[in-house]
Image (cartoon, rainbow, N blue to C red; front, side, top):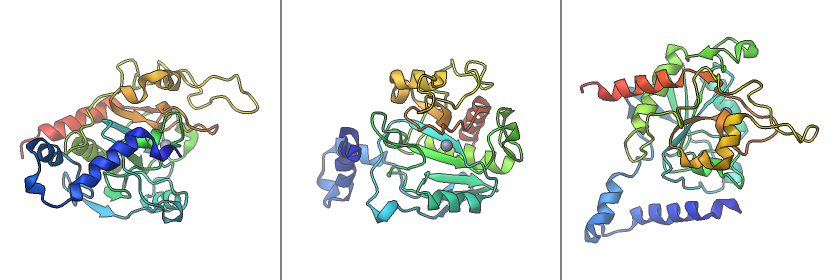
Length: 265
Ligand SMILES: [Zn+2]
């Protein structure tokens, strides 16, 4: 029952306290903490209307609270259509917090709840440790299919702009994910990570190694290192290792998010 692990439990108790009455009678430090709590469902994010379409948990189970880990995780849906992406993620109960594409932002989970786009089992509890998860409706590599999946890429504008808006929003607002790559060692062209990126040990080939970033992450860098991670770097994922978002120009995106924050209002 990993969902009752310590960090989740503490988080749940903490967040439940928000709904108690007599707020004004509470100590100043408690009030100060509440001010920085994440808004569950923001209506707008840097000019984008946020479409609220909650993806339930299997069997309508209660949502799990997330933690203030300062970690965001980027994915690609391998499908440029927002509607098809939503349908697939909904059917698979693989909810991210946000699906972006076609100049739209769809929010599928409260910002105070865990998403489920990763495999979240022990010992890494990836969904509990990923404060925010974004699914970009695009192919990794930026092509029309999977044939260019290993290319260095930047999402096209209608995917890029809403993603950057969310990254900028999540740099503050009680979420506080720093606009940085978890470590400078991870290059945008993936020169530090030889191919194949997403092949780990399988039953047929148990001695095969995970990719170098996942090995490092599994040894303690996840969830220690803060910033925007990608699915390919998250430890504890299954045999059919996803390698999204591949050689994403992540630093360019982080820079754009910072520029958005720096813009005079
Ligand atoms: Zn993914």
